[in-house]
Image (cartoon, rainbow, N blue to C red; front, side):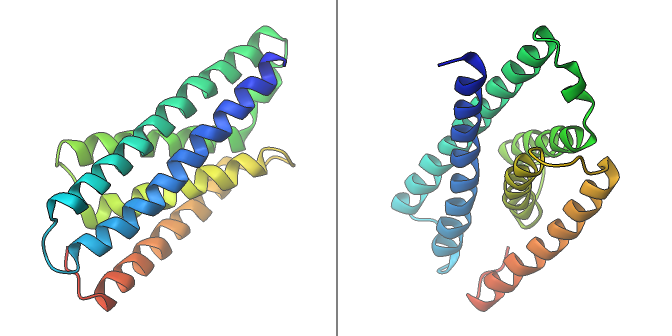
Length: 166
């Protein structure tokens, strides 16, 4: 198997772990907070899921850097000028900063939760868009911003419906 295929497979695995983990964090967090406290079993599920997301992020970062290097060394640097790719880099930066802020308890869960959830799904969608025609950087970020607001409102609505206050 050639290096490009291996890197793409690894990148997809990282994305799947990130998106799946972010999804299950929302499910487990809402389930855990329904009674107002996180019991040890719920905490262990959340911890395992946080680890899954971190592993997915690490795999995505390593394989993403590998893809950048491969494109550079195989004279495909033109790929690195795609504004859609730079929008993806920006959103990955949001994921990293958000994870660090959540870990350090410097950002409230009501804000960090939709940032993580929507950002992971956005990276997945943008990865698919990179296979087609380029989309302008600010257009991608505009739609991402709309998705963040809608995602935050939907998650808040779900929590209110479950009687959860963050």
